[in-house]
Image (tube, rainbow, N blue to C red):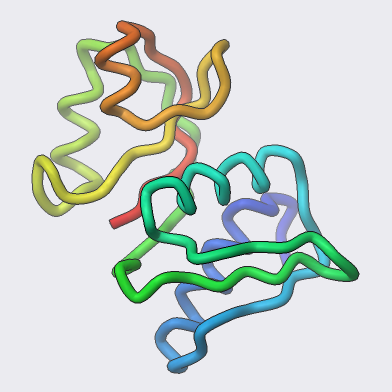
Length: 124
């Protein structure tokens, strides 16, 4: 285990998906991770999650890959297009998650609000 909770949990999700599982339970959580999971649920990559004794995460069959972006690149609105080409398979396939002063948002919302931030993760 590393110090990066987001990276650990996203790796556990991908390992469980490769093993044919539908859900995982993790013991470590953070507010940033919960916000990331809310965003994933909103866009259909996470089916459900509950923070009880441990954090129980059920992931969708629509999820092909999720991964944390390290190092956390700071991007301006003009640079987001380059990062989409680098991390996503196609232009309208998946989402980049960006941490901004307005909270966690997707790259589409960043275009609409015309703000940049730090890249956290991607889903597709």
